[in-house]
Amino acid sequence: DLWGHTAYALGVALLLIVLFLLQRLARSPFGMLCRGIRQDPIRVAAMGAPVSKTLLAMYVVSGLVAGVGGGLNAISTQVVGLDSVSFTLSASALVMLVLGGTGSLYGAIVGTVVFMLFEDFVSAANPFHWLT
Image (cartoon, rainbow, N blue to C red):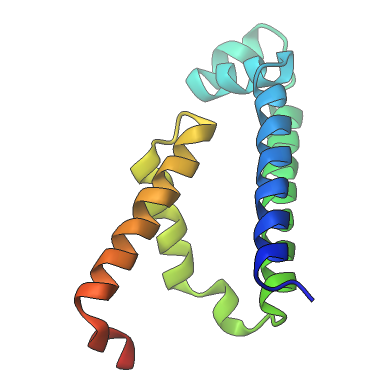
């Protein structure tokens, strides 16, 4: 049963592990290739790098990270319903990323903290919003 302090500790541990691994990946030659493809994929392809294979690997890595997050969410809430993939949740995640900046790994954490604090502040100011 993952409630309370156990779920929090597991979430923080997974966050630190995934953040460390992604930071290592971003600083590797693969990360440099990904940044090159982001800037100018035609030039990277002209230099002989496999752009399509690298894009596929980037999608696999991002899917893996999203799968870890979704698995942790399913374990902690003990339910996977249709509202788990709602537009509101997707829009909230996008706003968190934009708030923190899309160019860094730590920006996602900063954006999430800012968004959650703002949401908590707004919900405390208008508690009747949650009754509708």
